[in-house]
Image 1 (spheres, rainbow, N blue to C red):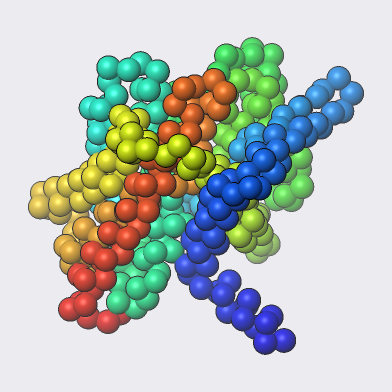
Image 2 (cartoon, rainbow, N blue to C red):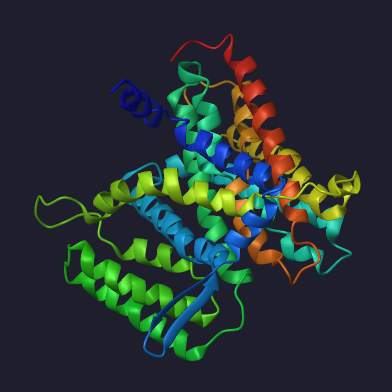
Length: 393
């Protein structure tokens, strides 16, 4: 009973998801740099086949995690975005101005940092979007460690910023990281989308039909050449938030059901599968090479300059006000925390530098881990120092 209560208290912590992510990444690093490294790599290379008649999907376990399970993560992101746009922190233009400006700065400036160091290498430039991302679970988890010293308005600012950032990442993946397209699969995917929209307009509130058509959509998108995880976002936008009667919201029901699975299982599994960087043969060049250096600097400096700079500009121009109860030091700390790219950066990195095809595969993970760790520690320290003299909230 005491053990059960301990677990219950742990999972109630705001930082629980971030702590599990850290543990999963650390475990991957430990195993892949031990005599058991063969087991780690063999596990990720295990072929997994799903077949119904002539339809066959055969991929190694790593790609099932990255293309399949991560579609559920993007489904959750889409559900959160839709809910926030309709009735949350993105429902009024005045609420979007400050985090929207910060998110734009946090996407553009890191990409410019990467471009500055890699523009003379066309192959390396595939990774320009890697430092654009913010890991909402990690960033909010680190901020939660400061407890009531940080105003709720600042946490909402970070959450809204990260949601807009995730939406930007989805758009970037759709536009720049799709492969050769299959017209037949795209046509079938379009038919699935039309079916989902029709169900929404006809007032269908049962989740099962949406999930069934969503599965068909995922298969079609997977076979089309567009990245399969985008099917999750499209499905989310088609699931109704409100119902004609006083029935439970289908969108919120699914969101609440998915959240613990994504936070405590899917994202840690993704981190375990993608963060296992081999440290054998590690040299100074592993950090100073233009690819990992561009990513790390983009995350640490680019995010800080972009988020803080656009926030400062929006406030000074009178477009918005600082989050209630927050000071500029705390905003600086949160801007640095936005450099924790981790999950989304690793995901984009797996698309930009495909293992076995790109000479830079693996280098991106070194830059992501270095930049994210520095952003986490520096961001926490700056926010903690700025919060010492701030009133308790």
